[in-house]
Image 1 (cartoon, rainbow, N blue to C red):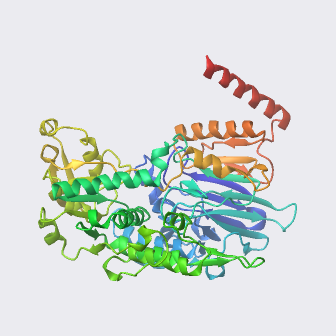
Image 2: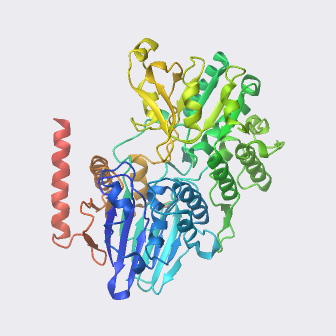
Image 3: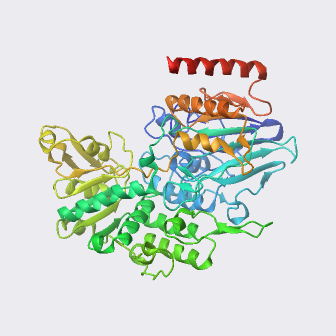
Length: 569
C-alpha cells in the first residue's frame, strides 16, 4: 500500500489523498474537495490534471461534508467513477445539501444531475464508532467522531489479514476544538481518540495558533454575545449576525437561547429572526443527529452519538437519566425548530433549563423585514458567513447605513470579503470612515450586481463575535495525536505522522509542538511534511528507511537541544 497526497500541501483547501495497492487492485481516495482562493484552484477544480483515472477508483472515503473535502465528488462520477462514497449518514445529508447549492454556481463543473449520481453508503445503515467495516477482501475502515461538525469523523484504513501483520493509517479529517469534559462549542461531542495505527495523517489548519482561555470559554463567548444584546436594547436597532449555515448558526442559536433563558425579563423584548433557508435544512439534519444513540454491545451502555455532555452540565441535567435526556432533546428542538416548534415546559434541570423557550421566527418577507428598522430591538441571524452572498447580501447594504444598527460577523472573514471590509473599519471613527473612497460590492454567483455600499457610508457599529470556530488549535491537534489512557499510560496515535491541510508556516509550528510533546513524554515520532503532490509514500515499512532509528533519534535530540539553547539566549 502507498499513498499520494494530492492536497492540500502548503494550502488549507482541496483535501484529497490517493491510496493504492496495485498488486491487490486497490485504488481509492480519502476526500476529494474543491480548492478555494488558492493559486491552483482553477486547475485543480477543473480536474484536468488529476493523476488518477476516476473510473479506476473503487471507492471514496469522506471525512465530512465541507466542500473543501467533498466538493469534487460529483465531478468524479461525471468522469466515469461508479463506486461508493463511504461516510456517516449525517455527512451524506449535509454534503448533498451543500453540493446541490454549489452546483448552482457558474464556475462549478458539475450539475444537479451529477450530484444525484453520487452513491452514498453508511456501513450498517448508521454510524457505529469503532466498528470494523469491510470494504474489500482484507481491507477495512473504522469511523471515530472528530468533533468538527455534525457527521464529521476521523477514518482509519486497515489492510491485510486481521492480526499482528495488519497495517493501518488514520486520517484525522478536521479536528474540532476542546476535549472530553472540556468542550468549547455547545452542542456537539468532542473528538474521540482513534485506536493506535502505523501512520497518521493530521490536519494543521491552526497548527501555529493557541487560543487564549477567553477564546475557549463558553461563558466568555456568551458574554460577548450578551453585550451585543445590551447594545441592541440601548439603540433600539438591529444586530445583523452573519454565520455559516453549518455548525456556527446552530451554536449561535443555542447561545442566544441560553442568554435569554438566564434573564428572560431583560432580553425577552428582543425580536429574533432567522433568515437562512439553508440553515433551516441544516437544523433539521442536526436535530435528527442529536436524537441518535449507540449501544455498546458487550456492556449494554447506551450513549448519545453526536450530542455532547456539555449541554447536560450547563443545564444541570443527568445524561444517564431518560427523563433528563428527553428534556435536553426538547431544549435542542426549541433552539433549532424556529417558529415550527411550540414551547415545551421543562421540569428538570436548573432555572435556565426550566425557563427555556423558543426564540426565533423565520423571515417570511425579507424586503419588508429589511424596511422595518428601528421599530423594536431586533437580532437577525443570517448567512453567508463572510457576508458576500445569500440573505446577508440583501440585509447588510441597508443596515450598515444607520448608526443604531450593528454588524457582527461570527468569525474570521477574508479581508476581501464583504464582512472582511466591515471588520477593516471596526475600530475606525465615523470621520475616518468618511475619508475612505473604496466600497463594498455584492454580486450574484453569475456576476450580476446586487448592491454596493461606499465604505464612507458605513455608520453601523461593527463587532467581531469570536469563539465559534469549529477548528481545533495547536493544543487540540497535539492532544489528538498524544493522549493518556485511564491507566495513565502516555501514548502516541502513530509513530509516523504526515502533516497536511495547512500552510507551511502552520505545518512547521505544529511539527515543533509535536516533537516537543514527544520529547516531554519520551516517545519516538517521525513527523513528515510532504511537499510534492506527485510523490508516493510507502506504507508497508517505517518512514525512516535510509537512516537507522537510533541515529535518527540522536540527531533529533541534538536539534531539540540546540533549539532550547537558542530560546534561552
